[in-house]
Image (cartoon, rainbow, N blue to C red):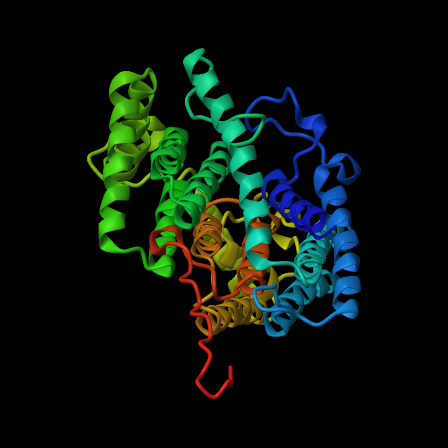
Length: 430
């Protein structure tokens, strides 16, 4: 029964992180094609309901017996700070310019809160390493299928200007490939088998580069760096990883059709648009080099101005789209600032500070890959997506904290040393 619970919990958490607002009604849509929101047809509602059901099972297990070493533990301060932030943002509907319009976003926040609390409760009395194994197995399997789909799309000549699959955007796909890379590093760290997992991680990074998402690429770098720091990877093992990754990427670039696409993506999105972008009125060339921000600079300016107009409590939930300033600011902190004001920012900062406190207190048992994935989503949320698109950040913080159980040994340290058997004394005492 315990195996079924932890496997189901890991699978549900992975689906929640990966699915977003996706539903079967999105199949067949072109990239960035608009679709009407229908919560009933979207997977996220049913995923969260399954998480709530497993939370009831976790509470039942908690009532039956006490906790054992190595099992997941509840983190009341983190959960309280998270619910305080989500609750305040939901309450800001009261002063939103269009309260009815903001109800959809209230539903988003409710799902985030239910899933985070549900995961924390469902993990009770479950062995923390096995919960993480189930989660990352599902993540790597699902993102691996998406990676194969993307490769097939590229080889068939249907990749288009920027790589994306199944009706999602390039930025979202880059984030998913980042999770594939970090998931592969998770299994490499705990199980070894560098010959398998390092090429998989390198493939995730290459496919992220093919999307042309600069924010997504920076987020992947931050996530992998956090993984290395938290995992305290020995220098010898780190050099081996870099060597294998370099060989894998060189092989892809030199001996597969993906090389041309990768070269074009790097030159266009990462070099010209970032380092040498030139434009003028009407598209005329100019000698003034500028960074191309895909219109985000305009959205950022609007969000900052809206926040300045309502500095304390913000303009209210979903005020940014309600005032026709844009769909969302494409920056988590700016969205919270303009809709929740300084109070919302302080509550969000409280969540992050509480999580950092948990990391410091539970650092010996904290999983580096889960922490790295949280860093990936946090940085990615500063250039893409809205508050609900950052849902994985909150769940990964909760996951990293509650599953922080010391005693698990990484592959490079080998199996735990056997304990010495007690020796009988000459007096007969043991």
